[in-house]
Length: 118
Image (cartoon, rainbow, N blue to C red; front, side, top):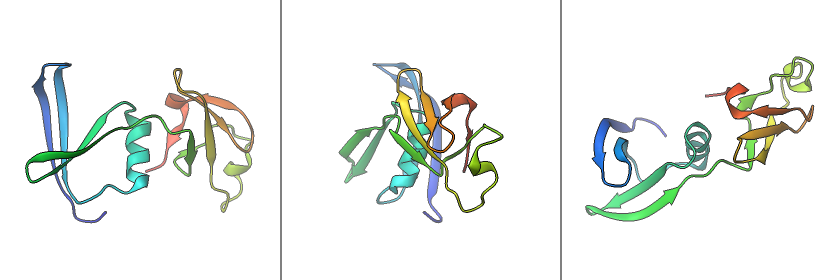
């Protein structure tokens, strides 16, 4: 995505949640990689596509089962720390506690301990 107009709104009233925040992006589609980043940062958020002032499509993003190249392994002896061409891969082992296993060193990390890559 390049040059997308973004609008941010905070503390909108919501009958279901009480209060909610809103991010409006003026674009046709969100690339899959952007959706994955959104899911990692705030799983459970709903994304609505609006066409002609009507909700055309609604998705609720879930925590991804597999994260490829989105986070760095925190294990200092993991091969991903030394080899430049190795892309990190993490598989979700428990979605409720948000724990991921590194495909290379097989250590398990909570999502909040992983360093996310922009």
